[in-house]
Image 1 (cartoon, rainbow, N blue to C red):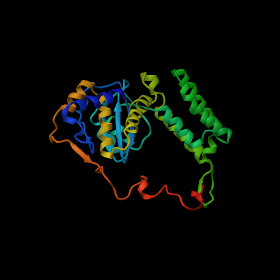
Image 2 (cartoon, one colour):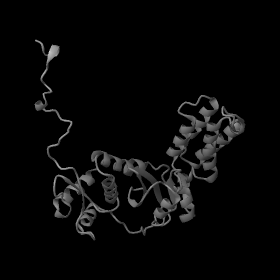
Image 3 (cartoon, one colour):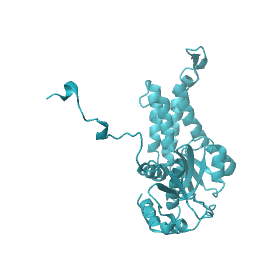
Image 4 (cartoon, rainbow, N blue to C red):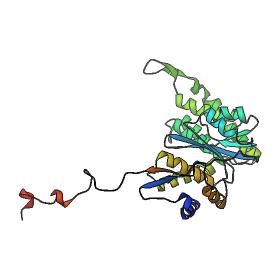
Length: 310
């Protein structure tokens, strides 16, 4: 936030982007960025919704923003447009968002995937809740929590053995079927089955312990807590902006995490193709016929009848 406030104040000091009048607000033009040329060891990917738009972001472990992509929703095409601008890294840390894994197979087929363990645990929590009613569910939820204690290859082997032991003891429960209330033939323990399939499939694909082999991060916390949370904080501090203005604000927040402050200021001072900045007019200030304010001339404080006695 400090860098954002510094940029805003320094841009205001220059005439190019100063506010011309109280009834107008300035909207900075979109920030364009060239394709990334440096190949990184690990990259984090995540999306954040701003208004009706989704902003896909890619950063390094040092929280340097590499690229971003606006889209209507997370999809294979949107993720592919983002990934094509970045050289394939050794490892990518991501969640299980829609379309991201299909785009990774298409654009970065040789890149190893590390699923964010925090998102995995939240997925198990959604299926089993915080306090599963059955002992079987509590044991499976505890296995998901134990992922946080896996720090070595030996720990990972022990965890996989516990997962296999759970399946040997309780696996048949995930296959049981009964008739539901609406007469549909379906799995009796559907939520337990979903939680098991999530852990089993990720373990089979090798997406849980990639961080142990390549010494990378195991969650997207640096992106969630550093970049995404910073964008939300900046928009919350400047609430009331239009959707287009919020998009520009998010882009310039990302710019401050992509290039140095001085370079960002020089970029802001450059004259765009259209030298006239875009302004969004607000309602003019003046007397109104109907309003929410109270006026003594409306006789609101003259009390009559019993309430005015004494």
